[in-house]
Length: 290
Image (tube, rainbow, N blue to C red; front, side, top):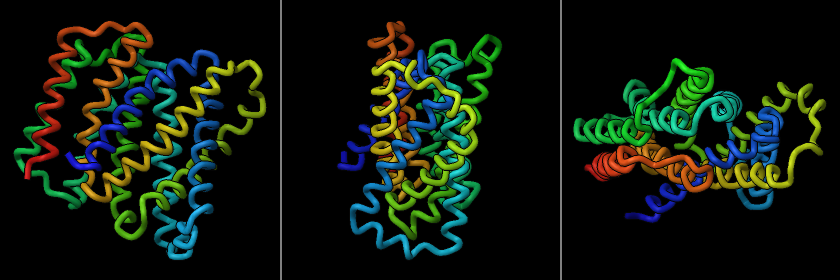
């Protein structure tokens, strides 16, 4: 295990817990304002780090092509993905949401292969398949696309596609610039788009009706899930590539189900424990095969 592996596992813990954090906060925090404030807080942190360090000197190295790529990444990976994620969490179960988000490594691997970024060897495909089987066991009965959660499930599926495009498309600019610069600017662009789109809603929001605990959950989600975890994710993309970094996403449903069981009282079954073992096996095959 390398230091980067430990960082990626920390990212998994943060993003897995974030399902419950968001679910709890949305009980009295309207989803649009909640997401807008998350993005604003996260963007403020990124910009503070950029302009408070020598990293600001790298901004002048950005070309016109870089800015075009950053605008695309901000629109897809911040604006659209965060909209789909928060709206999806509100409208579906943590189990369904975790399973759907867990599909992202497959989509990323396929898109990476199509784009010619990385050749996926047969043994890695085996690892992906084992982990996908475990992912199904973790959730138990799998997706329920016929019940009341189908809108949330559809939003989550849209989020997976946005995340995959974002992860694959960002690898080009990451070869020229640091993860911090790329994240800070894509968040600034995406957050600006989100706030502009929701401005009428934000002006009508009764902010005093939101509890202090929900505000705390919003700040926690912003600083951990959007700041620290995103930086780890981009660092993984830069050093390991898309498919090998994305396979850690298979662990997110395990953490999501465990946190939901402890915090929200959702039951954990034998199938879910067996699935967690399969996911870990698939992770080892996919991550460490040469």
